[in-house]
Length: 132
Image 1: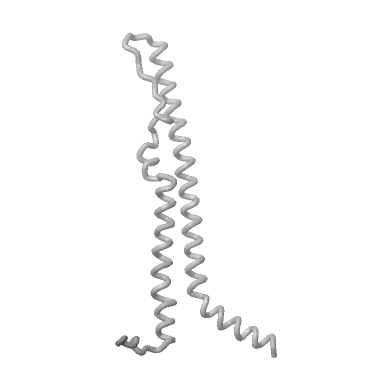
Image 2: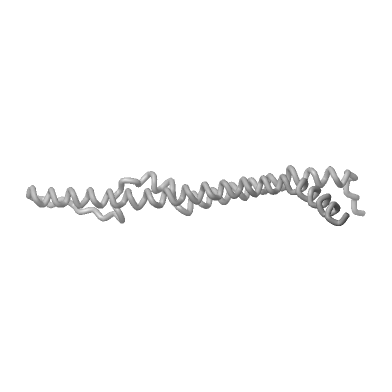
């Protein structure tokens, strides 16, 4: 024989669901979106390799000593590292901007969710006022 569900007030069940269970799920989803953004833009890896040469484009120095050739290779490698840093900074900035946007959208969703019961009551009384 099936055990009946414990008898509780339906308003308390709704209150617990609306203000405890769903916000917990929303926070979990919000955290997953932020982690996805961090991983999608590889922000941690880009910060670690900020001054690495772009696409590992690095010229090795020759065996003999030629000052002009060493000078040319040195500045080519410096330009490759600067280009790598510039591109990585653009991707890091883009990832942070998208992350800030996601953070703001998450806050707006939570504020909307918590204000929804009050909005429903307000709209109900507003509609009654329009009808009368």
